[in-house]
Length: 119
Image (cartoon, rainbow, N blue to C red; front, side):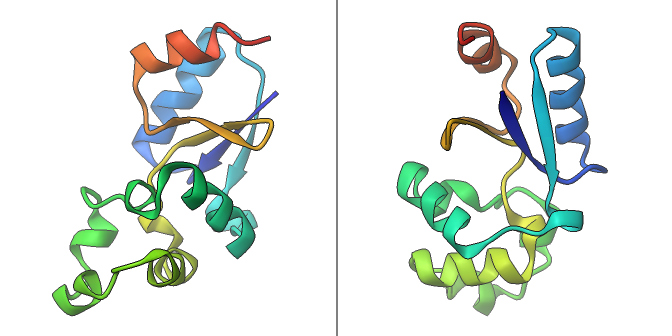
């Protein structure tokens, strides 16, 4: 089973969940806003894809940060601190299978390649 991490009212997450349902992919949903996220989970993700990819720099939350806050994100520690403080800045959806990231963001081609191939 897949775990989809995101925020329920995010349009990109909604698209991903609709796609998963339409393609009958079993998943459970973890809402950052309701269930939060842990530092160890963010560290594990960062080790897999790098902290830079975990931060959604195209999103409103990032764009509303003061420039000095944006510029202060120089390493995993500062990035995780920001993601813990403002979990809306985490790129979403993030989809995990067996503790491994299989997809980050919504990309229908990637979903078809990865999510429809695994048991």
